[in-house]
Length: 134
Image (cartoon, rainbow, N blue to C red; front, side, top):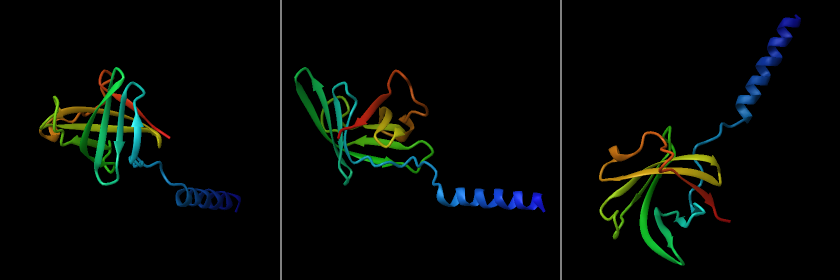
């Protein structure tokens, strides 16, 4: 009888845990302004448009771009597209994202014309960490 009670308590505890505890999702809200604290700001709008601001001295270069964010992948992807000027004109930055929290993520990307350019793992020499601006 004692063993049966123990099993019932364990089973009901595990069932409660699975019902009420949601696993941490890789999907976090991207909309808003993010900074790498080293002179770059990414401002994502809900409609897939973004501004990428890069500081040179006391001035900013601003690139109006589009983005695609897919957090349903094992490693979420973030692609920055439609560069009109500069060295990325006509290319896409195919990237991967890893969230540390809902206000910090790291981003690694490679330019290309097809998704095969996307990094498979994070390269410590290229990765940028972005922080949500409040």
